[in-house]
Length: 92
Image 1 (cartoon, rainbow, N blue to C red):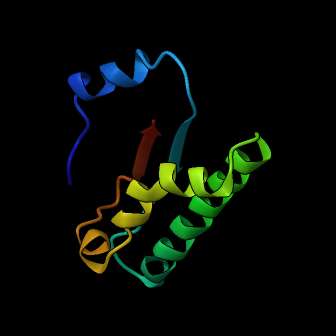
Image 2 (image 1 turned 90 degrees about the vertical axis):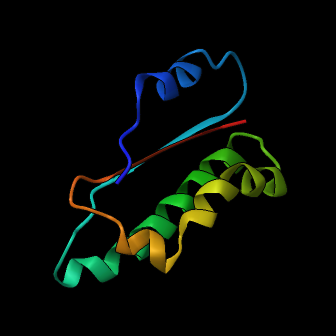
């Protein structure tokens, strides 16, 4: 699991304009909850997309902005997930 560094956070703090999305969710290393994590993640992405569209962004733009998060949703990604949780930051 990769921990975010100060250097990675600095550009997020300096983001002057544009839409930014933060997605936070707990993750589960074992048990029946593990199978629910990808579903919860997809639901959070859909929720973020709905907020962006409600805020005036075109559907295609919202999808394009969220594409890096959508691309994370692979079996390999979920197999590497630990119990600390997930935080995703996206900006233009």
